[in-house]
Length: 244
Ligand code: MN
Image 1 (cartoon, rainbow, N blue to C red):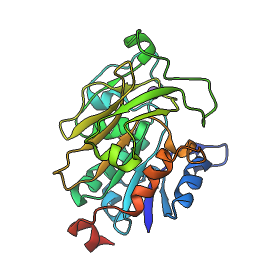
Image 2 (cartoon, rainbow, N blue to C red; image 1 turned 180 degrees about the vertical axis):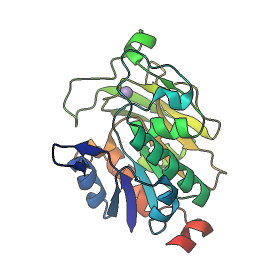
Image 3 (cartoon, protein in one colour; image 1 turned 180 degrees about the horizontal axis):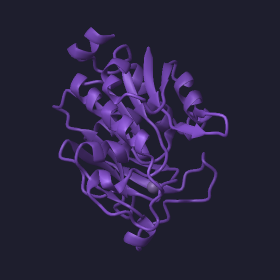
Image 4 (cartoon, rainbow, N blue to C red; image 1 turned 135 degrees about the vertical axis):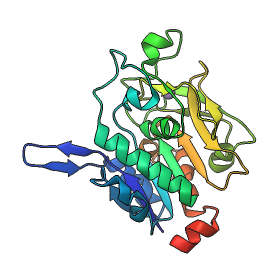
């Protein structure tokens, strides 16, 4: 089974190069998945064609989404925009939604998913939600930093097989107003949103997580491995099966 996974381009003196953290490679290969890396597309009109032979879309972590995408002025802590990546991933999300292509959205991936569907973001948790926990930890990337409660009737709980977990945390932004298409199914003890999904009746299978499960697949706890394993046992929509 082949999944598409987005990546940024890293600009070097020689040329812009696609870049994918090795942890994603380990997580996908560990689940028995083949993958196709999708750096920011030169022509976003090709988004649907780019996804035409894959079984799922994985949206990865990265820099902040341009606040202009959700009608906000940039906060002083918001990173400089990366317009090509935002445009490419928003087009891929629209194409995935149109085709009901199952989508796993990680960290920035969950944030741009929410923005693409009409939601907004908290631009800097530390300054805009001062009573929140520390979500930008200096801990190891494979170390669990805070608890997350998962709603027991959610797809996420069914996938990971648990309702109380702990996760790593490397995000200074979070979901604010949640898109109508998405349902909040996981929160940190400070109410910061840590997981979303589409409604059970929606033909589009979507899971979004604010933590980095790809960094935790070597952990004794199976939760994060199960997130990637879920991509090998997806519900098959007629649209998607016709496109495989
Ligand atoms: Mn967090």
